[in-house]
Image 1 (tube, helix red, strand yellow):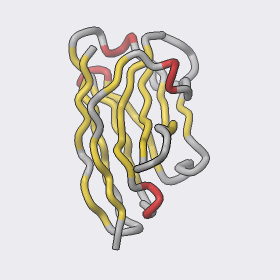
Image 2: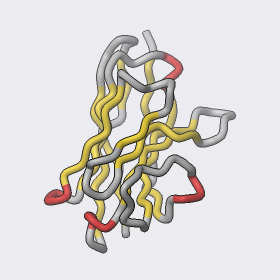
Image 3: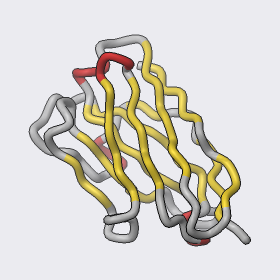
Image 4: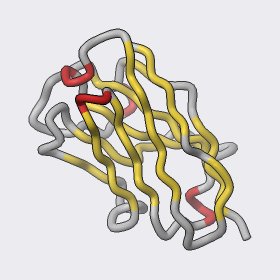
Length: 125
């Protein structure tokens, strides 16, 4: 499956952005989906995940209550709504596909099989 992320940009603290990730190549509803991010000089970290039918989600503690992950299987797209953005949210954001149809949303990088190219999010005044 190929993944194409978009929607990044520059925003002031307290602002919002919505990231999108479109999948192609195989049946989207077979995959759990996740968002990860990587800031300069840091390791890639988990942000949010959603299982194949959207009945399970998972969030990193640092974004819980501010970010919302969702998916539209008819459009083969997963979204990340990011609200109340902080400078520490600045990073390249990656979407990823987990080739397992599970009842839970997984959080480890190693559990994801396919990765998109990343989109830059910069939060600065």
